[in-house]
Length: 163
Image 1 (tube, rainbow, N blue to C red):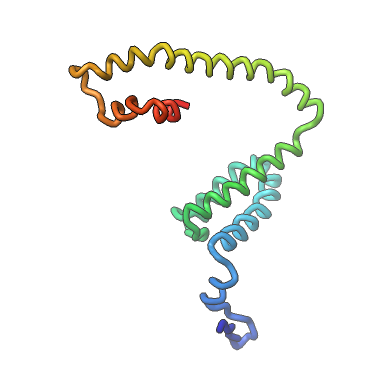
Image 2 (cartoon, rainbow, N blue to C red):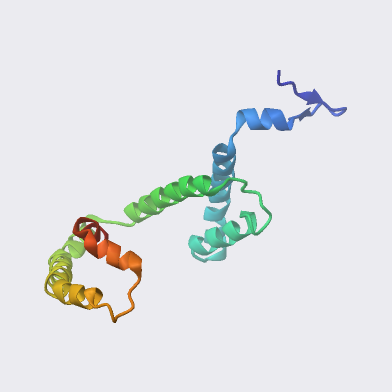
């Protein structure tokens, strides 16, 4: 049974068992993260600097190498990272206008061309250079890591790694 205690000044003391039952590590860190977000936005406006710098500063202060307020493990970091990406996309969406979207659309053909040339160069480089690489690897005088030889003996695995 979880029971809270009352102090002499009628404030409620939350026991560690109650805190653990009410908030797990993700919930605790999420509340701290959202509280920091509430503080950073007006503070960055008042100081006239980018909120990203303040987020980095607060991250250093509250993280495991600072005060250790955020107590979660790597899983919590990934969850908070997802929220960070969502906030970043939301802010970028606020700054995006239809005119700006049309301007960015004009670079699509350039990006698609670069992607096609890069994929083609890598594919044909491996396609044409693969047999030469196999000759070098199969030469017993050349010291090669056994793991690399094992990968080259399994072309499906080698292709999956290359992809």
